[in-house]
Image 1 (cartoon, rainbow, N blue to C red):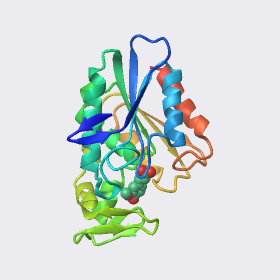
Image 2: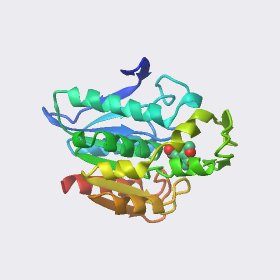
Image 3: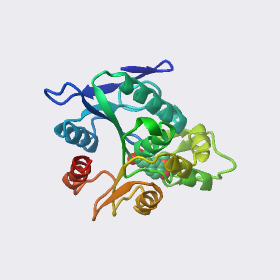
Length: 243
Ligand code: FER
């Protein structure tokens, strides 16, 4: 557990066997997700197999962390990630810090990497949902539409979730390009070209804008790598070995 401004964040630290000092990868799940999802677990296992410790975290209002889903927003998630990175930096076995996030966690990782650029030796946004701010400015969130100038108190999805309107107000203020420009370290972007939640064009756009990026597109794969998860993990392995 790590406390962030009174909120308990559920975390899981795992270290590779036998390593005294090693790098550490912070791993962040997506919207409605948590640290035990198949693709998040696989990501942790991949880093561990490469001799890299992992720190998975359930973000505000998700998994076993404090806060409610309805009250979560991207400022809270970005603050959570800064707090977790500070905690990770203090662990005395840690050599380098990697930051990895899936979807909304990928967007969060991109924002945090911009804010803490000198602290992060590698950034791995997986299917990052970095169109959320743009979509929120246009009046859309996961297929639910609204007047962007008259944000409702609550956003209700046909899938059953409810989000406070503040989620949208916060999202509208984020300018991801500026945060991309602030992070000049190495980046690995992974994205399926049959992603149903985040268009693959956003991965191409991010790869073109980052100073030092590799882009791996998984042919025919979905948002959570339903078809080619081992290929997504192999992309991480190859990139890490090449560093
Ligand atoms: C959206 C598209 C994708 C959105 C969130 C996502 C909240 C994130 C998905 C994920 O994290 O898996 O419009 O709005």
